[in-house]
Amino acid sequence: MKQWKEQILYAVWFTLYIICTALGTITERTATGHILLMILSVLFFVPGIILVYDGLKKKDKKMLFRVRLVSILSIVLTLSLIVLNILCVGAGEKVGQLLNDLLILVSTPMFCSYIRGISIFGWACIFVSSFPFMWKK
Image (cartoon, rainbow, N blue to C red; front, side):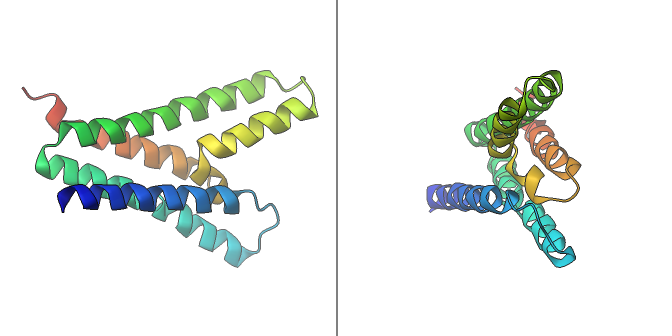
């Protein structure tokens, strides 16, 4: 049963990733659309938070490591693509569009939310909260 809960949470998280990726490409939004997409971008982090909570409660280092790996990869790739996008500002429209599309894939909830910092903050919270039992021997 315990393994099923983790698999279901990963499936829900992946489903939210697909939904956020698809809806994050919408460019023309109403005020209601902004609010709904912001709620969706916050809900995206709920399965990760539950996984961290379960990992801490069960002292499951492997689960915490997996969640930490996903979160740090998203943070590093997001920040790297933002910097690369800035550095390649004069490279042309196609390069800019390619980097933007990659950024949508790497930092999905960022493009769903009107406030872009929510995504980085959410990933950072998940990353940092996965550490407490890793420092103890």
